[in-house]
Length: 235
Image (cartoon, rainbow, N blue to C red):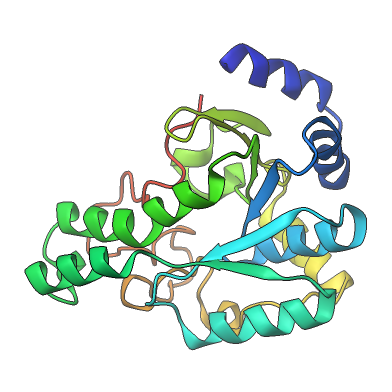
C-alpha cells in the first residue's frame, strides 16, 4: 500500500489542504473521517472542512480525563461552524478493569501502564470510529516532533489498514497561528498558557521557552518516542 500512498503524494504535490481533502472526498465519498483533538492544527482543519468540504464526519476521542477547556471548545466550535463533533468514549468495563487493577493514575508508574491506558482510552475507540473508512484525516505536521519529521501528506497506516491524510504536513507553527488569527478561529485557551500540545489533563503540562513542542506530554518519560500509539505506524 506504500506505493499507492506514494502515487497520491505525487498527485497532491502542490495541493493546499482544502484541495487535498476534496480530492479524497471525491474518490471516497462518505468514507473519509477527521479525528480532532481540538488542538490548533485540528481547529484549522475543522474550519476548512466546514467551509469548503462540508459533510465529512468529525469526531474526537473523549478519554474521560480531558481538560475542561477542551470540553468548552467542543461546544464553541460546533456552534461557530454549525458542525457536529462526534464523541468516541472508551468502553466503560475496560476502564473499570484497568483502574481497579492498577489505580486511577497508573500511567505514572511505568511506560507499559501509560501505554495500556492510552490503548484503552484512545486506541480502541479510534479503531471503532475508523472501521469501514478509507481515509483518516489528521492535523499532523512534520515540525511537531522528530518522530513526525519523515511523514508525507499521505501515508499508509499499517495498524489501522487505512490511508492517513495529513493536509497540514508542510505547515509551520507560524502558518497555523496566522491562519487561526486571520480567520478568527476559536482555539483552546490553554495555548495561551504555554500548552502547545494538549492531551489528557494528568499527562500534559505547559512547556518552558525553548522546550520541544511535545515536551509537555508524558514529561516524566524519556524524550524519545513519546507517542500514545495513534500516530506511529505510517509507511
